[in-house]
Image 1 (tube, rainbow, N blue to C red):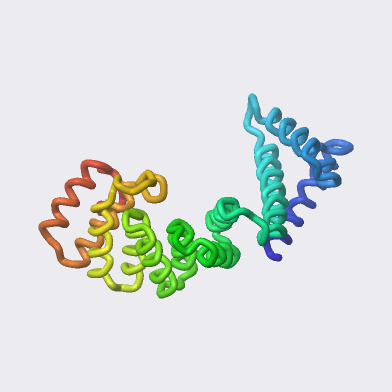
Image 2 (cartoon, rainbow, N blue to C red):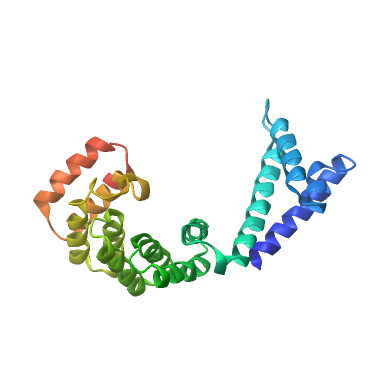
Length: 235
């Protein structure tokens, strides 16, 4: 409701400013009749406004056009949530996860867990949503399930290590991450797709320090210094 109200207020402001500048802007036409044709006309018009020079007004209008369309499409997916094919439901949940709408994403992942219990990815992504919601115990359970259903699920190990770190269980975090690193490049997914090597490398560095692994820490420090000499995490 809050998100909808913010969009509505912004739209009214932009529409009013557009009306003051011209009799009827393409943005106003789109607001009155949100067809694909009106969206494309408005989008192309505002893109043209900033083609050769900076136009902050055009940029913010384009942002709102995209946001309104996104909310419209998400609404359509929400209405059909019970009829979506598993792959589409998973991608829908992932969009909500990216938007930090965890309370909406988690039930979708749970439905996939029930219908496809051996599919590792929804378990891993639900673990991320739970972790970022601060529900660490539930996140641990989901991520362990992701690993149980696919032993080589590299990024599930990395995320579980982060959960353990946030729980203050650094020894468990280090053990989990080192186990996951054994599967780096061996999983069916690109290891950089879900977590960058730099991020996992600095997580390893942090955990080695917290666990008092001095020799390993120094070796990892030199490795990360070579990979990212200006990174703030080296300090």
